[in-house]
Length: 62
Image (cartoon, rainbow, N blue to C red):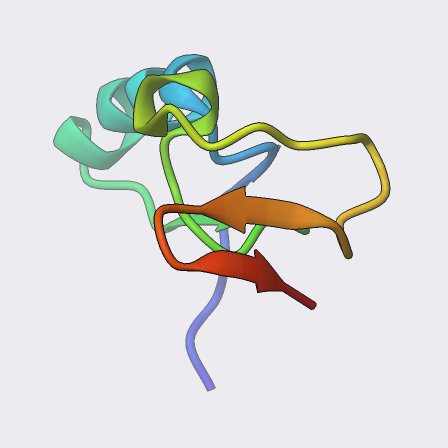
């Protein structure tokens, strides 16, 4: 089991960008998210703050 040096909660565009800095410094980064897709609002998928109701081009997921 590897050691995690940094934990980032939220895999939206800000969380992913924040994870780059410690990763480039050689630290092990863990990014956690309740969403099905990474990227947050950048994906264009509405999230209704439940983590269960996510819509995409094909209909409802979850």
